[in-house]
Length: 264
Image 1 (cartoon, rainbow, N blue to C red):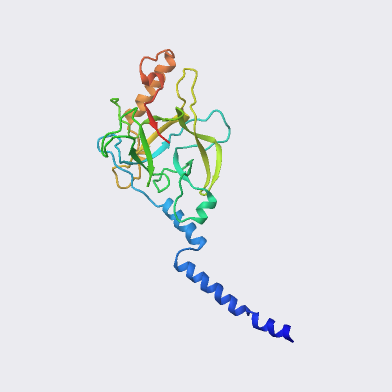
Image 2 (cartoon, one colour):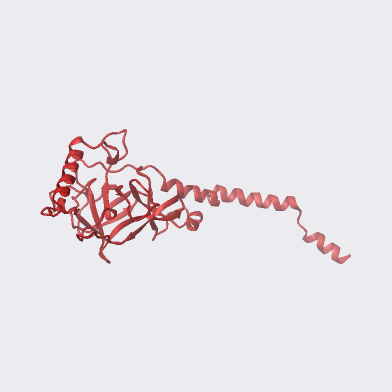
């Protein structure tokens, strides 16, 4: 009898438990603490459309918002690889992405098949030491990439080499090494220099700092059609190299591209 009385006084009915669960659910929902809300908020921020800086003088400046793109090139060392232009992207840890509202750093990197500027692939050119916002970024100068986050040639939308200053290795997108990220299958990004028989960096080490297009109907300069003159010039250079493989008197003939140093 005593046992029965004690049991009745401590027992909680299913309706009461459901009510408490619903109250807790509604409270967390109102505070934006539900797992699905956190997941959605971070993903919306990382995929939010971004506006790249438009280069009026053809140069990249400190403070510009750009995409870092690995230009499409033939891959001869693997049968299975990601083709096309690959943009450098921030890749958060999948578990942390479900538990946090904000992007946690340090954060991983990957290369994805997208040319649309969004939060995760739009970077700001930051000063390394003593430079001024708005100043032109010259070849050989150190700079930093922030996520929102002298040669005669111009850097904007042209191929460059990016070197990790601590290891002196070039930034590369391994198109044949796949990562299953929070956003799907993408390519691994690492610091490794690939040289050909002439000790020149291979195309897989080439990158472009891509700016916005001046036309409102286009997102980036990659979307602009190439002028016929550029295509003709490229064909003429290829013919010269085929007819005279030893001609390497100029940087273009050697296949070299300007270098920048990226502290990481």
